[in-house]
Image (cartoon, rainbow over all chains, first blue to last red; front, top):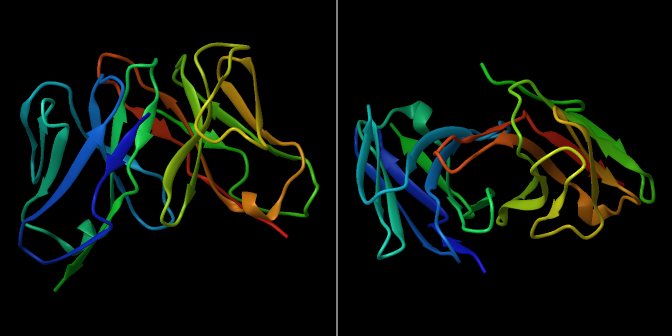
Length: 110
Length: 113
Protein backbone atom coordinates (compact mmCIF):
# COMPACT_ATOMS: atom_id res chain seq x y z
CA UNK A 1 0.00 0.00 0.00
CA UNK A 2 0.89 3.66 -0.13
CA UNK A 3 1.15 5.92 2.89
CA UNK A 4 2.15 9.57 2.77
CA UNK A 5 2.23 11.74 5.90
CA UNK A 6 2.60 15.48 6.33
CA UNK A 7 1.58 17.85 9.12
CA UNK A 8 -1.93 19.22 8.96
CA UNK A 9 -1.20 22.86 9.63
CA UNK A 10 1.68 25.28 10.18
CA UNK A 11 1.82 28.97 11.01
CA UNK A 12 4.69 31.31 10.21
CA UNK A 13 5.46 35.01 10.07
CA UNK A 14 5.89 37.06 6.91
CA UNK A 15 9.55 37.10 5.88
CA UNK A 16 10.38 33.93 7.82
CA UNK A 17 11.19 30.41 6.64
CA UNK A 18 8.95 27.38 6.94
CA UNK A 19 9.84 23.73 6.34
CA UNK A 20 7.08 21.26 5.50
CA UNK A 21 8.04 17.64 6.03
CA UNK A 22 6.67 14.65 4.14
CA UNK A 23 7.35 11.00 4.89
CA UNK A 24 6.25 8.22 2.57
CA UNK A 25 6.01 4.47 2.41
CA UNK A 26 5.25 3.24 -1.08
CA UNK A 27 5.64 -0.01 -2.95
CA UNK A 28 7.89 1.73 -5.48
CA UNK A 29 9.22 5.14 -6.32
CA UNK A 30 9.33 7.11 -9.55
CA UNK A 31 9.57 10.58 -8.08
CA UNK A 32 8.05 12.97 -5.56
CA UNK A 33 6.12 16.12 -6.35
CA UNK A 34 5.08 19.17 -4.36
CA UNK A 35 2.02 21.22 -5.24
CA UNK A 36 0.55 24.45 -3.95
CA UNK A 37 -3.19 24.82 -3.64
CA UNK A 38 -4.99 28.04 -2.75
CA UNK A 39 -8.47 27.74 -1.28
CA UNK A 40 -11.07 26.93 -3.92
CA UNK A 41 -8.49 26.44 -6.65
CA UNK A 42 -6.76 23.50 -8.32
CA UNK A 43 -3.27 22.41 -7.22
CA UNK A 44 -0.34 23.85 -9.18
CA UNK A 45 3.06 22.25 -9.62
CA UNK A 46 5.96 23.49 -7.47
CA UNK A 47 8.76 20.93 -7.63
CA UNK A 48 9.89 17.45 -8.53
CA UNK A 49 12.57 15.25 -6.93
CA UNK A 50 13.64 11.82 -8.10
CA UNK A 51 17.27 11.75 -6.92
CA UNK A 52 18.53 12.45 -3.41
CA UNK A 53 19.38 16.01 -2.67
CA UNK A 54 18.11 19.54 -2.84
CA UNK A 55 16.33 21.19 -5.77
CA UNK A 56 16.15 24.97 -5.56
CA UNK A 57 13.67 27.17 -7.40
CA UNK A 58 13.72 30.75 -6.27
CA UNK A 59 12.19 31.05 -2.81
CA UNK A 60 11.14 27.41 -2.82
CA UNK A 61 13.42 24.40 -2.36
CA UNK A 62 12.64 20.70 -2.06
CA UNK A 63 14.78 17.97 -0.60
CA UNK A 64 14.60 14.20 -0.98
CA UNK A 65 16.14 11.25 0.85
CA UNK A 66 14.97 8.02 -0.76
CA UNK A 67 16.62 5.79 1.84
CA UNK A 68 14.65 7.54 4.59
CA UNK A 69 11.43 7.93 2.64
CA UNK A 70 11.55 11.62 3.43
CA UNK A 71 11.15 14.93 1.69
CA UNK A 72 10.71 18.52 2.74
CA UNK A 73 9.58 21.70 1.06
CA UNK A 74 11.32 24.85 2.23
CA UNK A 75 9.64 28.20 1.74
CA UNK A 76 11.91 31.20 2.28
CA UNK A 77 11.11 34.90 2.65
CA UNK A 78 7.49 34.09 3.25
CA UNK A 79 4.89 36.33 1.69
CA UNK A 80 1.21 36.64 2.54
CA UNK A 81 0.33 35.08 -0.81
CA UNK A 82 2.12 31.90 0.28
CA UNK A 83 -0.80 31.15 2.59
CA UNK A 84 -2.11 27.97 0.97
CA UNK A 85 -2.12 24.20 1.27
CA UNK A 86 0.99 22.33 0.18
CA UNK A 87 0.56 18.81 -1.12
CA UNK A 88 3.20 16.10 -1.22
CA UNK A 89 2.63 13.38 -3.83
CA UNK A 90 4.54 10.25 -4.83
CA UNK A 91 4.59 8.51 -8.19
CA UNK A 92 4.74 4.86 -7.09
CA UNK A 93 5.85 1.78 -8.93
CA UNK A 94 2.55 0.57 -10.33
CA UNK A 95 2.40 2.61 -13.48
CA UNK A 96 2.13 6.36 -13.56
CA UNK A 97 -0.21 7.65 -10.91
CA UNK A 98 0.21 10.03 -8.02
CA UNK A 99 -0.71 9.28 -4.43
CA UNK A 100 -1.17 12.40 -2.32
CA UNK A 101 -0.63 13.19 1.30
CA UNK A 102 -3.38 15.00 3.18
CA UNK A 103 -1.81 18.40 2.58
CA UNK A 104 -0.32 20.96 4.94
CA UNK A 105 -2.15 24.23 5.39
CA UNK A 106 0.31 27.09 5.87
CA UNK A 107 -0.90 30.34 7.35
CA UNK A 108 1.39 33.34 6.96
CA UNK A 109 0.81 36.09 9.50
CA UNK A 110 1.96 39.71 9.21
CA UNK B 1 -0.08 26.42 -21.87
CA UNK B 2 -1.58 23.11 -20.91
CA UNK B 3 -5.29 23.28 -20.51
CA UNK B 4 -7.48 20.81 -18.67
CA UNK B 5 -11.11 21.81 -18.85
CA UNK B 6 -13.87 20.45 -16.66
CA UNK B 7 -17.32 21.00 -18.06
CA UNK B 8 -19.11 21.99 -14.89
CA UNK B 9 -17.78 24.10 -12.04
CA UNK B 10 -20.74 23.77 -9.69
CA UNK B 11 -23.51 21.17 -9.74
CA UNK B 12 -26.39 20.30 -7.46
CA UNK B 13 -27.97 16.88 -8.02
CA UNK B 14 -30.58 14.81 -6.27
CA UNK B 15 -29.92 11.45 -4.65
CA UNK B 16 -30.30 8.68 -7.21
CA UNK B 17 -29.59 10.86 -10.23
CA UNK B 18 -27.01 9.87 -12.82
CA UNK B 19 -24.22 12.43 -12.98
CA UNK B 20 -21.66 13.00 -15.73
CA UNK B 21 -18.50 15.00 -15.15
CA UNK B 22 -16.60 15.73 -18.34
CA UNK B 23 -12.92 16.53 -18.70
CA UNK B 24 -10.98 17.53 -21.81
CA UNK B 25 -7.23 18.09 -22.17
CA UNK B 26 -5.42 19.70 -25.09
CA UNK B 27 -1.87 18.35 -24.64
CA UNK B 28 -2.20 14.90 -26.20
CA UNK B 29 -1.46 13.29 -22.82
CA UNK B 30 -1.90 9.55 -22.61
CA UNK B 31 -2.61 9.52 -18.87
CA UNK B 32 -5.73 11.03 -17.37
CA UNK B 33 -7.02 10.90 -13.79
CA UNK B 34 -10.05 11.61 -11.65
CA UNK B 35 -9.57 12.56 -7.99
CA UNK B 36 -11.93 13.71 -5.31
CA UNK B 37 -10.86 16.06 -2.54
CA UNK B 38 -12.45 16.19 0.88
CA UNK B 39 -11.42 18.14 3.99
CA UNK B 40 -9.06 16.10 6.15
CA UNK B 41 -8.77 13.34 3.55
CA UNK B 42 -6.75 15.04 0.84
CA UNK B 43 -6.85 14.02 -2.80
CA UNK B 44 -7.93 10.45 -3.42
CA UNK B 45 -7.68 8.69 -6.77
CA UNK B 46 -10.96 7.35 -8.15
CA UNK B 47 -10.00 6.08 -11.60
CA UNK B 48 -7.27 6.64 -14.14
CA UNK B 49 -6.64 5.82 -17.76
CA UNK B 50 -3.44 5.19 -19.73
CA UNK B 51 -4.99 5.12 -23.16
CA UNK B 52 -8.21 5.28 -25.10
CA UNK B 53 -10.80 2.74 -23.94
CA UNK B 54 -8.49 1.73 -21.11
CA UNK B 55 -9.28 2.32 -17.42
CA UNK B 56 -7.86 1.32 -14.07
CA UNK B 57 -9.40 1.53 -10.61
CA UNK B 58 -7.82 3.89 -8.19
CA UNK B 59 -8.16 3.83 -4.41
CA UNK B 60 -11.88 4.61 -4.14
CA UNK B 61 -13.70 3.44 -7.30
CA UNK B 62 -16.91 2.27 -5.63
CA UNK B 63 -19.96 4.11 -6.90
CA UNK B 64 -18.13 5.51 -9.92
CA UNK B 65 -17.37 4.51 -13.48
CA UNK B 66 -15.40 6.21 -16.25
CA UNK B 67 -15.31 6.42 -20.00
CA UNK B 68 -12.45 7.27 -22.36
CA UNK B 69 -13.66 7.04 -25.93
CA UNK B 70 -11.24 9.67 -27.23
CA UNK B 71 -7.71 10.46 -26.08
CA UNK B 72 -8.52 14.03 -25.06
CA UNK B 73 -11.69 13.25 -23.08
CA UNK B 74 -12.12 11.39 -19.78
CA UNK B 75 -15.57 11.26 -18.21
CA UNK B 76 -16.51 10.38 -14.65
CA UNK B 77 -19.96 8.87 -14.11
CA UNK B 78 -21.91 8.56 -10.89
CA UNK B 79 -24.51 5.94 -11.76
CA UNK B 80 -26.75 6.78 -8.80
CA UNK B 81 -25.56 9.79 -6.84
CA UNK B 82 -25.53 9.60 -3.06
CA UNK B 83 -25.00 12.29 -0.44
CA UNK B 84 -21.59 10.86 0.49
CA UNK B 85 -20.43 11.72 -3.03
CA UNK B 86 -20.76 15.41 -2.28
CA UNK B 87 -17.22 16.59 -2.90
CA UNK B 88 -14.84 18.50 -5.12
CA UNK B 89 -13.81 16.47 -8.16
CA UNK B 90 -10.55 17.16 -9.90
CA UNK B 91 -9.57 15.89 -13.33
CA UNK B 92 -5.89 15.79 -14.28
CA UNK B 93 -3.73 14.72 -17.20
CA UNK B 94 -0.04 14.14 -17.81
CA UNK B 95 2.61 12.43 -15.64
CA UNK B 96 5.32 10.10 -16.86
CA UNK B 97 8.57 8.53 -15.64
CA UNK B 98 10.58 11.53 -16.84
CA UNK B 99 9.27 13.80 -14.12
CA UNK B 100 6.59 15.54 -16.12
CA UNK B 101 3.87 16.62 -13.74
CA UNK B 102 0.14 16.25 -13.94
CA UNK B 103 -2.00 19.27 -14.72
CA UNK B 104 -5.30 19.78 -12.98
CA UNK B 105 -8.58 21.17 -14.17
CA UNK B 106 -10.30 23.84 -12.11
CA UNK B 107 -12.44 21.33 -10.24
CA UNK B 108 -16.13 20.50 -10.14
CA UNK B 109 -17.98 21.12 -6.89
CA UNK B 110 -20.76 18.55 -6.65
CA UNK B 111 -23.49 18.70 -4.03
CA UNK B 112 -25.89 15.77 -3.78
CA UNK B 113 -29.09 16.55 -1.88
